[in-house]
Length: 179
Ligand code: ZN
Image (cartoon, rainbow, N blue to C red; front, side):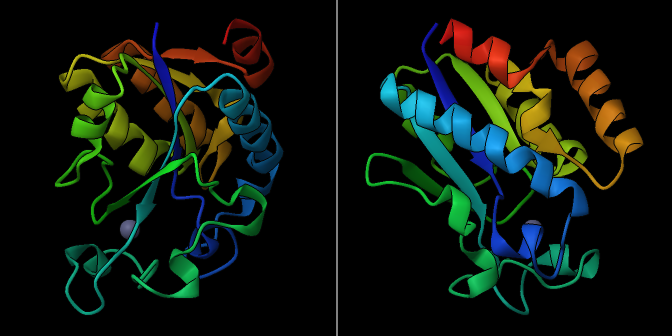
């Protein structure tokens, strides 16, 4: 197994701002623990960040304006800032694969297993899992490193990803023991 950790949309607008997810706080220490462990084991850490174009992106017909490129809201939260060794991929849609260079980067890093963390379980995490599944990656989701707007939405998405994409649902502590 050659894994990479994806940190999805842990941005100011999702944690504090325009699209604030109240439940985001509980996953921050777990993601931090996981990415620090990954860095220590030379496992790539890839941030996939919403970076929208003001007045253009169609997503703004459904959601309040958020994570506009170049603004505070589009920056990774203070607690999880990327280091020089990490990779950052900007995205404009829910899936971290859609019209980005993520797949190319993963292939160049010889990655076959994706560990998905971040926000939101039933939106960007689930769509990224779908695209990862279509491309043949093995997918692991530590359930205490992702969250949604409610427990019901969170649980339903985990169940869907497990049944439909074969995602392995686990917990941070168990996963760290294997990496
Ligand atoms: Zn967005």
